[in-house]
Image 1 (cartoon, rainbow, N blue to C red):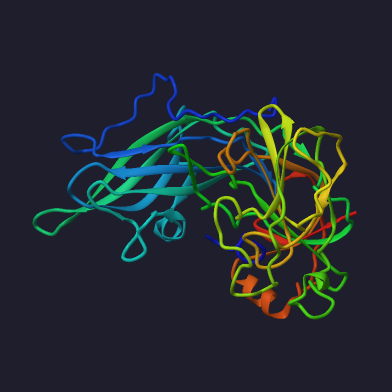
Image 2 (tube, rainbow, N blue to C red; image 1 turned 180 degrees about the vertical axis):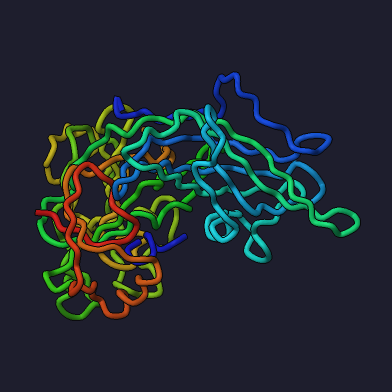
Length: 391
């Protein structure tokens, strides 16, 4: 959702869906009688380019298979073929912000007691001028209290994986509207789904878009009326040739910025009125939150790049008019695939923001434009939260 990432809750396919690799390098075992921490990566997406850096975004699943609690305090990433120095380090503060503990709301979320698990969302960055290591592994640092009360730290080397190349998915925007677009490109990283017993993150690279006027305003009048949002009703277009594999229509729209949704969230309604476009290479493009009755396509239609699919709206899990767009691996179930990496072929980065700025923008219904620093970007993925211009 806009402002809070959809109301919280290649040969383009190069990604690696395995968590082990063949290598002569054997990881060191922890100083324990047996290994008790299981850690693995279910899906490794392609690399993306963000602000001149190669980035690998993925989820490391971690579980404690012993009766004694362990506290995760630090994570280091190493080149498997040359591990003299770590290539990335994530400290306790990062873990606090990025360690997902399903079902647990209180206490120190870094503590894994007996049979507990968590998922750490990782973003490993590497200068674009350097070659990203082809194989990496993780060193987890866990604290454990002994019977005497002494805290002992155990380094644990786990989860070897092969790093895919930079994605070959390079797209245009899912709309033709020129001008300034506010976006969120990191607001969905914790959007975890279970389909047929399998955990996936279909929105791993999802972006929420909303159009603003030349002065950075979201609306032109009463913000409780969808029609007063500059982004409302903009035509959404196919980013590639393809075939329509699923649509959803008839979900009534929300009142912008209301505390309540017009329709209760379920798996059938969360995406609102949507279109799913199969663009080949086992890749689906998802367009969510469209205006009811605005869809221009039906299941089975053959679509040409640039063809209008429907109109941007405010249906489903949405607090204001915006487009939710992402790519995911082809799947027969709604949000059942893995979120796939992609790059945008050309845009101007006007500014970037942090997540704390979002409430300010929501209250003022305006993005500040007085100190913009335009930078032309080609074949990159946009930084976190920001403002871009499409010419």
